[in-house]
Length: 147
Image (cartoon, rainbow, N blue to C red; front, top):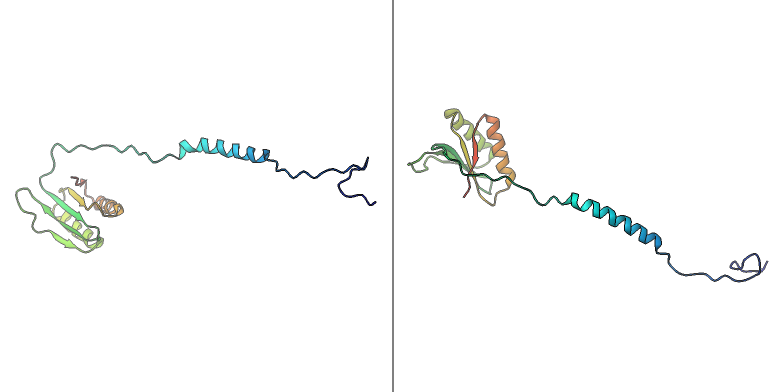
């Protein structure tokens, strides 16, 4: 029983240990991953969004409540009237004060639309929040100012 572990039961020949890596399973795994990525790649391409276009309204309102939002969370609100300078605008320090002032102006002028002008560096969520709160107040027409 002094035979080595590499010798077979018959013949006493020595088998050599093969030190090669079997790459066939790795190729199979890589091909399966390649197929998965090829199938999922078109589904995950969500970068292109087809945004609807808007044209300038044919008859913009003459008088409206104007809200100017700034990046520092402050705002300015007042009534814009054609032919008159924009006087009487009030600076408000935060969103709650803006909503109180908008509620007051809406109570005084219930049919007047609201135009929101926001700085291009503002967080977009702030604009959406003002639009949402204005709609909750019952303001029917809310628009965005563009250049």
